[in-house]
Image (cartoon, rainbow, N blue to C red; front, top):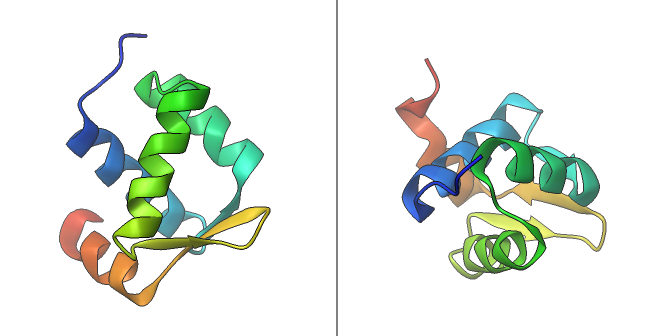
Length: 79
């Protein structure tokens, strides 16, 4: 699958987290990102670092969690 643009991948990951009770293990989220958005290891890491830096998600060493800001960002994206 060709890599999609960053904005689409960011939205997709946030929506995916929201659909999974706001949290997902890094292994599962990495697999989703790779299959859905063509984000391999380095690109996935960079994308997730940006989401953490934007305070949309936090990482506890194993699981990524949506923050309150992340939930607000997802907002009306879920239909």
